[in-house]
Image 1 (cartoon, rainbow, N blue to C red):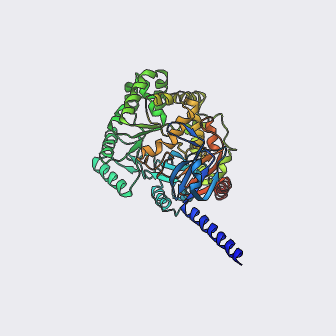
Image 2 (cartoon, rainbow, N blue to C red):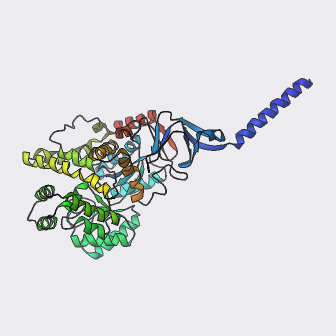
Image 3 (spheres, one colour):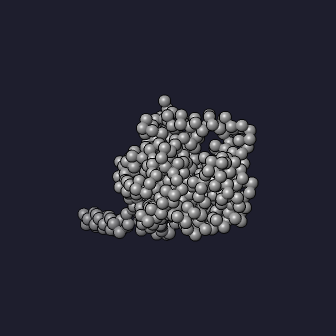
Amino acid sequence: MKIVMKKLSLLLLFCCLLIACSSQKTKVDVMIQHGSIIDIVNGEVSSNKILLLNADSIYGIIDEAQKSNYTAQNEIDALGKFILPGLWDNHVHFGGGDSLIQENKDLLPLYIANGITGVRDAAADIAPSVLQWRDEINREELFGPRLFTSGPKLEGYNSVWLGDLEIGTRAEMLAAFDSLQKLKVDFVKITDNTISSEIYLECLKEAKMRKMKISGHIPFALTLEQVSDAGLASVEHLGYALRAGSPQREEVMKKVAEGKMSPADATQIFIESFDASLASDAYAKIAANGTAITPTLKISKTLAYLDKDDHSRDEYLSYVGPGLVKTYEGRVIRAAQADEAEIAQRHARYEKVKTLLPLLHQAGVMILAGTDSGYLNSFVYPGLALHEELILFVEAGLTPLQALQASILSGPKYLGAQDQFGTLETGKSGDVLILNGNPLEDISSTQDISTVILRGKIYNRQSLDSILLTVKEKATP
């Protein structure tokens, strides 16, 4: 009996010791181990670290030797894989009218399935719905990437864009900004269809005074340096940077503004007279002002080569609703009507414009990786397009690390959210992407996704495939 009691006492003591040891361990929600963690700032890769997540933030990064001090609800073995922050698409659109609101909404999961945890919506004609989605996503009532939006864009009277805020006087401009502030937009978008140069510049100054970031197109009557000096925070589309390299730009821009020359003919002059040294001087000036550029090479290349590339069998067409696919038709039809000279000019423009990207980077201009994906923009598919954009960046002369930085670092920095997103650091967002290959060696590895973690929820490959299937089923007529 004494022996039995002694054994029971020892067993009880052992159990108590186990409980005590367990209680001394720090509990976390997710432990990602055995993988290689990529530092997006400097490109360093750490293979002996463990990433710890609690709720939707990073608890810490520890040495593997410290693992015994922690216990996790979910352990992820990332052996042979690469860990980095989630990707960002910094120029997307949701639009096409009220009848397409649901089709647009159905695209939101497509970004997550492609490892994109943040998107910047650069205005369209269903702004009230997008603003609602943003807030619902933030409250975790809607499944989608972190969404930042400009709301309705600023334009002149009778512009081609539906749903914009049309302004022609200072009073109308001030009312528009008051409206945007009430909507709590994340930034402001301005385009150049019918707005006067004077009101355009006033908008830039007003946004700067109100401490609101403003992105936009550039009227032909204004130079890159002028809009940068006035406060434009980002130029949307790389083509606008072409004119900065032409010694004839002021004369040509004036003719276009007066209706004496077509934009196409002006662009041809800009290409033929381009001076890299002159352009680099202009780029250095806008870099000093903090003006960024979103190249959107994917849409530019797609439209330039519609004569050569047959998209009718694109796999990703099946993920886009029929109403949105129909909005592609306008640009496809216009491209098909072009003659040989116009087609050759399209090709030449794209090939020249893409060479500006390394010049901008060398001058210190912040590059934002964005795709222009969404309605109207033919065959630029939400989710997939960002991966293709990064490949085009590398083909144009950036390194894979620089391409990744344009997506992951630049987006949060532009929005003033770099303290929350962009790097894997204690206290920052726990939005994580786990890849099967090293994107620093092959940028196409961003498409080989093992796991996505967003707001503390884990989506493994099976879950991501299920998301893709659901999106496809909803898009099927």
